[in-house]
Amino acid sequence: MTTDKRYVLALDLGTTGNRAILFDRDGEVVGQSYKELKQYYPEPGWLEHDAVEIWQDTLGCAEDVLDEADVSAKEVAAIGLTVQRETCLLWDKNTGRPLHKAIVWQDRRTAPLCNSLRRQGRAEFIQERTGLVLDSYFSATKLVWLLDWVRERRPQIDFENVIAGTIDSWVLWNLTNRQVHATDSSNASRTMLMNLEQGNWDEELLNLFGISPHMMPTIKPSLGEFGTTNLFGDEIPILAIFGDQQAALFAHGCDRPGFLKCTYGTGCFLIAQAGNQVARSQNQLLSTVAWSREDSTNYALEGAMFTAGACIQWLRDGLQLIASAAETENLAQQAQTNNGVYFVPALSGLGAPHWDMNARGSFQGITGGVRGEHMVRAVLEAIAYQVKEVVDAMNRDCENPVSRLKVDGGASQNDFLMQFQADLLGIPVERPKILDATAQGAAFGAGLVSGFYDSYNRLIERRQIDRVFEPSENAPQVQDQYQTWLKAVERAKHWMEDV
Ligand SMILES: Nc1ncnc2c1ncn2[C@@H]1O[C@H](COP(=O)(O)OP(=O)(O)O)[C@@H](O)[C@H]1O
Ligand SMILES: O=P(O)(O)OC[C@H](O)CO
Image (cartoon, rainbow, N blue to C red):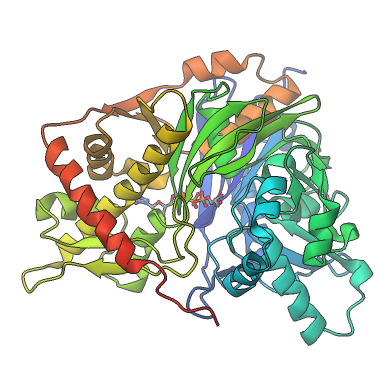
């Protein structure tokens, strides 16, 4: 490693927005750039992203952060890429153009296809092969929908030129001047097409979904070589790719069984490290890849909750009840109680532990005295209640009960939410200074592969805690409310009929 290398660049492409962050040798942030991403809702329950916008914003954020920090590509040791998972697209490798907008992980349009596969008795086979619950959350049925759409609307297309991928593959392909069509095993494990035990595309699953193997990216180790980019003035190697939730697990130092974290971003994702053996849940949690190296794979158990920060975004953009996400904290404090209002955050159905694609969001318990701030508070409380459900499921699956919750992500900056979470769980909630653990994990990974960082343990030891929220005297009352919320959840389930 030459000494002119002073930084690692993390590209963190989330659901709500894309960011680029520069980290120095101490693992500290020296600059960042962020751009919110447009969300397209063409029909109820559908959500799309413009993959060209994702790529342009990725490039723009990376250029901005380098410019603003006055850093040249020569000084960047490596790039680490981390992305929203499952969201996928098809593109034409000759023109470089997507054939349709990307279908986002929250999109429910393929629920009927999943239900039909379930009726055909395929759910257990799929879960056994992939570790995943059969659900429209994952990429496989989204790719089926996209392929059908292309066959119908673009019959002239030559399918030999059509390739598929999750957001990491799309951005990597563009970063490398269309040279590298690859993904890493943490992202691949979320497609519902990867054999979890073997770490390769499963032929039977590709057949089942009618996906031709030539379309699929090569699966590589998360920590390893993904090619280089010369788009910033000099060659920079891309040395790590992770799904964003797995990147956060890496950043929190959760590299041994018994360690877990919860990221409060667009959705909320509780992930427990399982070590080098696939862990199977008895309680509707997912088995997934945490990350892989050339010679080893780490696995994890995951509770995926689809709507967390997304319902705050909805209060802002949909209901226009608030002007900024940050306002929710004061409003919830001012409200003092939820005034009997409970919110079920099933805006995209329910993930763990219910896996109900047909559930929809609801406010319940509304009476004449309810004001906006009670509804805001109910929304924040709901984020915490669903985490409690998943922690309980994790406790049933694992030997040692969760005794401390390490958190990160945009919504974890909300003090009301974090205190409410500590009260509800009755355990401390630990919030680090750097909330962008997803980006931090990608930077740590790429920096370690390049030799820019020499010790994972030292990086983890250096991370600083911002605040620990201890359960307060309100805990018993908050825990009582949880039972009422569970009642509200039961009423929101199975709302939609299959078409
Ligand atoms: N103070 C806050 N309180 C609650 N939610 C917040 C706050 N600030 C940001 N958020 C939510 O955090 C989410 C963005 O977090 P981030 O970790 O960047 O998500 P992603 O990686 O999914 O794009 C948004 O959905 C936003 O509504
Ligand atoms: O955009 P985030 O950070 O909420 O993460 C999305 C997840 O990766 C979806 O599985």
